[in-house]
Length: 175
Image (cartoon, rainbow, N blue to C red; front, side, top):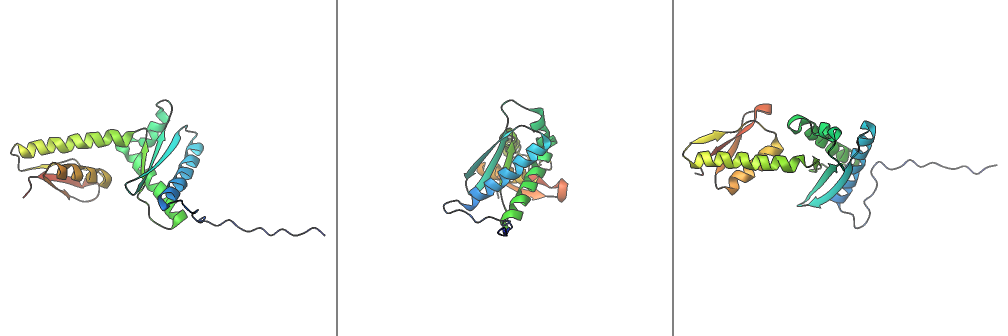
């Protein structure tokens, strides 16, 4: 009689190997998720993982600038933000802990950060030139954080006002 083989189901969340940090594990899970997504969508791209300042940064890049990667950024980064949230949910489901990972595609976040720094500088110039306050266009939480930090570095004050998609920053002189 042949010997019976008992099948043991895989664990949903594999234990972390010694020496592998939580952020590295988070990066690996996110990269696997994104790789599968790229395969399903038949989009070419390389995934880079970097851990710095207590966060996991994941970049998807292509050898040549690809329209398909640009479609993953979307208008004003809306698709990119949605993919970042889905990737965070994938990490949450595998590790049972929330992730603060940042996803970038084709350097969009870096270019956008430069634009946000310019927006902050322009608002600061108006306030320094005598305007009482400057209300900026609505933006998401991630972008508001970048602008708040830039305004603070310039020695001015900023606060978020409004609700939902109308939430925006108002810049004023420090009191």
